[in-house]
Length: 256
Image 1 (cartoon, rainbow, N blue to C red):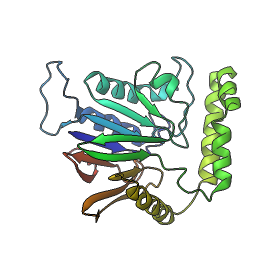
Image 2: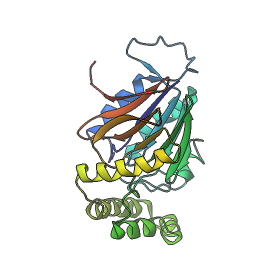
Image 3: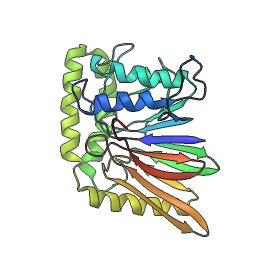
């Protein structure tokens, strides 16, 4: 089995540098049910499970079939992978939430508001964006609760779409300011969190939000344990793969 994990593309639209990179990357992925007659190139990655661990979009509000037009091309690529038999899962981040109405309701893609647990080749794997791991940042946690409240959800259903997307960009900037912390400090907080989860029986803890690609493996009670933060598609173009139970941090090299 092959699983691929990525996070923190922070897509803003077609003019965003991450957008064409991700279009090309998803173009290399193939599901095992891809039977459209195309020959599979030598650099194609056959994948069973794709997990996007939050902040794939720098902002998100959708209503029914109406999504921000600049996101449609990359959404179509994700939907095509699902049609090929890839299990696609989205964890919501601090910039993209209320994803279920569109991605689950319209596309049948699994959406997890915070924590997701997977069984991958006999491994118990915990995945999240990771923005709630630091419980000491009370200002951010309060903003997060408000943005996900019933009031905010009701409001976003009433506003004109252009105003809604403008407000979504504003909430994105607020989230960046309030949740700010050095990557190194956040990574250590996340690592300590993972150690606690290993004691609960998890074999791997995989998080986004940090923007720093990290892969640490160690033996606990004779069993291999894995901690990873996924980096981003702004500076690192990084993704994590799991092939037959072994994890590897990768970088997408364009043109190769």
